[in-house]
Image (tube, rainbow, N blue to C red; front, top):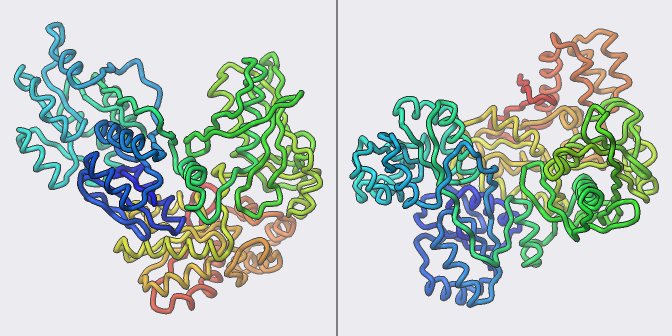
Length: 606
């Protein structure tokens, strides 16, 4: 069993990752006030002193502890460390992502140093706003005794307000975040409005990381000319296995407790290429050959990737986990050479042997370029510049067996010749058989139902989900469910769970397949029916010029550029009409809303 200490955004993300395994785990919070839906997780509420924690771990056969608690919960962190040493339990610390320390901010070690600095006789501080939480109220009372006006920003929870009064705060000293949630407590606009109203001389903050809104608060204060004082985060105990994102968390759990997940995750070719390129840079520019390199993924978390070295650079052996991927086991190589900085870009990325070449339009790169998608290119460039900001390099990615393997993929049909593509959006492969994927969808739908919301929003993946979340900003995150390719099965689940309202967010590639009657849009099950697309264009009253251009498309998303802007809404309505004709019968007692999303996130509806 796994024991998680949460109550934070990181705790929420931990739950989301562990729920995918379908196995039970314990989720502990001090107050029990976090609004979170648990399907397989077992909630625990209340403080857990050291002896109680030891007894609990022994009696419930705990084999792994995940510390996803607030970074300033120092007492809890050290209790977990002592328990782990006594019971020989591994601890994964889900750490936050922290920006570099801004020299415009005054950094202090603790509250005592903050008080000394704020009451220095040379200071002219008269008004202080603390955003350090309700626990800071008693710690900062000496400032009030020195005649400094104090305000405390806290969560609008009954427990927080009661504790604030216990510590001596009065109503005029309290101001509140917009929401009682631990996530997305405020926006920069909220912060600026509060700071402008109070006009403090100093805003006191904790180094709470990106998920704690640290940059929003400090940016707002500094932009208004308000001084910022920040309390540095405590140092974590030694021996914790640190991750700073959900992908790294899953991979660490798979490593420490391999049986927890039925299927294990893997790395995309883009991540492998990035790691190989970064290792080649360490070798060339620093004469170092680390056995693993830290790769920053698109969601800004960092994971370690093992690397090898050869005469021309470095390489990574691709591990696809349990995903049935034909590229599993391939060697992804990278070589780098320095240039004189004469080229337009600092980092030039090229494809070598085994990397395909694009011969048809409709991809991230133009015809003639190597088939290295936009996200992997950005990953390679960003990771190199993070370590070598002044570097001017040409990076060549090669996959020796790529041309042979490409024959077993859809690349030839898509006009990519000479090898495979270097792809990946998240940087991580999550493996699912159809049965496993559908089971995962079902679990997510059940969690969405447990949220109490009347609407579930189903979407194909991270990109479409990002856009529909903007469309429904007030809905909780657990009602957004990915269907992958299984649109029909997911709508049937929504019907079985008696959702009165279902929104289907779909991008054009899947939409044209669905409009033609394909409820499973996987490329192995269905392909784009070009003649049907032409019929839909005619029904939308597009002229012959549009029809002729559409006859030569390789990917459906090219239609967004072919159809004139004045006719896009009408074309979208035709596509949505046919999609609805195949889906509405699957939801006989509910209302189905279909949103068609273009590549820029614009949303069309009927």
